[in-house]
Figure 1 (cartoon, rainbow, N blue to C red):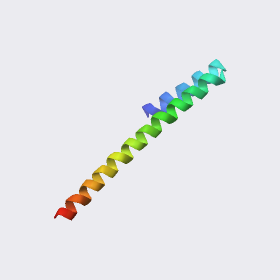
Figure 2: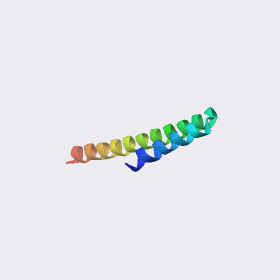
Figure 3: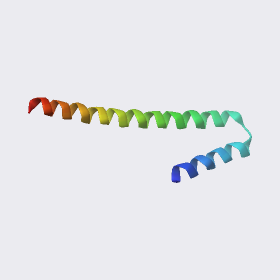
Length: 59
């Protein structure tokens, strides 16, 4: 809910300014954050999976 609200507010702010350059920076920044979060989650899930596999092999 909060994320969608903030995102909508950002888009409204961009349209109000009517400038394209800040919009590009905002979108790139948002994509960068999302990509970082996805990679972090993927890495953590991979680490847990690998650790679990090693424990299974040890047993």
